[in-house]
Length: 338
Image (cartoon, rainbow, N blue to C red; front, side, top):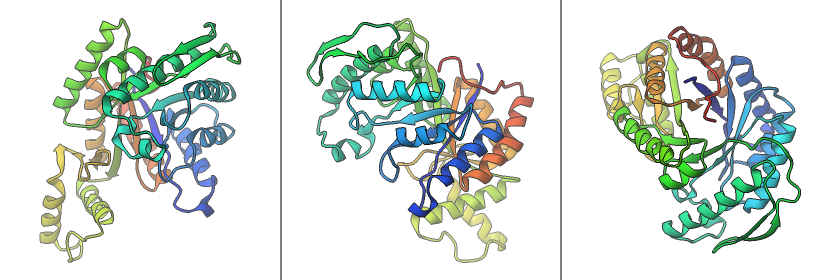
């Protein structure tokens, strides 16, 4: 199994930055040898399909994993938009439909369904979307509880459908029936392995194969002490409260600060101080490479990574991390499942 790495596009801090900041990130990712970009949606981000379309003109091979909540667009409209973007990107689109039960998007767009109703609605949504994206399928008449369509899909094109990425918080049956990949929350390897097994078994029951992805922040430095000091600074920025008043040169304070920060480790170098945010990999280059190798050995074929500042950290990843992964025998490139 190969290992594919995508970079999460950051939010632009102010309007004056413009799309140029995203173009820089996209071109850096392509130059560094990464496989794709993850284009998020939701508060703080513009409409993801528009961003993906803009970046198509400035990249040539990056896969564009484009996230869009099912509350934002009807399934027939999404199918039409996805086919257009798949065409102009020459087959580089990947679709991520996030589970908006995990955030406030569904209420923002006026959906107040409970969990069971949401599963039923998403099931109808995925059935329609999968049919309309399938080449050479017949126009669709559909009458469900949440969607009704007549002769849908008349303007479809005969092109390959974009692979679909679904969150692990959706029902295993929906994931097994529709996803090319499942996006898992980073966790202790033992729990992660159990989730991979559970979802993989559900896919086998549907006579399908399923790939797996996970999302991680990165804090990588030349040595572990530097990385954990940066993790401490990151946590201070998130909380607005300094963890220590003395300078970083004070060895005793450095030790106390490191102990305070590392209590959030789920596993060596896998750090999650904020439950609502993805876990971060924190450590030296060799430590981070070892953890990525371990995740790959568990069955993770796609990593969605982020760090700050993006361009600098992308280049560090390409120059120092990817070659070491390849030296350990890991084939870099898109996973065959997605």
